[in-house]
Length: 322
Ligand code: PBG
Image (cartoon, rainbow, N blue to C red; front, side, top):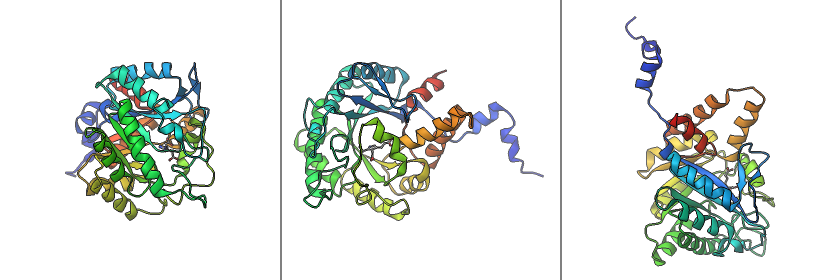
């Protein structure tokens, strides 16, 4: 026998030498929830270890993210009051815009401050946009609000905005609005291929949202693969600097496809339900938690994601530092 692949697996040293894919803190982004009116962080039951931050506790987490060398933080706001228009999203004193400003004051340019650009945390019906008279999500009225929301986030200090609503034409409108307001350097990280997924379940608790109906008229059908390429190419044409696939683990084929057709960086979002599944199984003693976390992240990187958004970002970076 000439070919013995086991030769390159025989010691930890040789395995280290030939490993193709690595996790590095600079490619991990930590999603964070900042809630209005909290004085103490509040645990999220369905995401053990993840909290709704107060503005104060969030500041400590931003500083820690810098010291860990993370790629960035992706901020979500949890407002005390929601309404049909999601007006808290545009208010410079709205919780998300305040959190962006806090983060920027804390980290300067040492860490990328990213913000979710979507209305669902701010609307009382839980949809990503405003509704028309028939109760449908009104695409064009929504993207007009997204443009203004992007400018508000840029003014608050966001380095990167992350439109996640899957409205048609949203990247074009946001890019133009940012440029017109003098924010040419603000990066657009487009949730390009985003599926109507059951894996966002725990996120609802994280942002105190109860969704009326579902998202299937604007987020993608889990049965579709080619559609992601169309969505991604449209976003790149409209000026997306980075494109993202979401969720990650159930869509690794899509990550690989997207990586193959674009020359911009590709991100993938390991969402709340992916986190919750591993934590729940580990809490039962059914899987080795740390190994399962690393394996899940490696799979996403191996599929072709340059950047991974994960609720384990700080923990994994801490482990990599040791
Ligand atoms: C939209 C948004 C969502 C997530 C990220 N941005 C919720 C949704 O689309 O339903 C989900 C993230 C997660 O589940 O961890 N604001």
